[in-house]
Length: 69
Image (cartoon, rainbow, N blue to C red; front, side, top):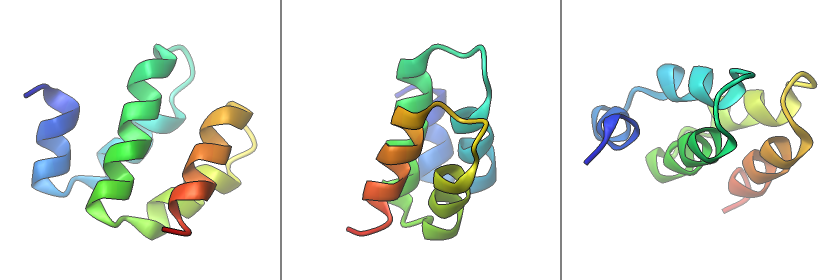
């Protein structure tokens, strides 16, 4: 288990959202953070990522898709 998984286990949605929107981080970490938000059912945080125009479009789309599951 790594730090992103641990944050998901703890339900730390805010911290996961920060990882997802932080530019300069490797895209794979950001995508995993978004997926973990989905697993936590953190719809509000996913919506915030999806609406954040500073986030890479692929991350926004992933967050948007997960809000509809």
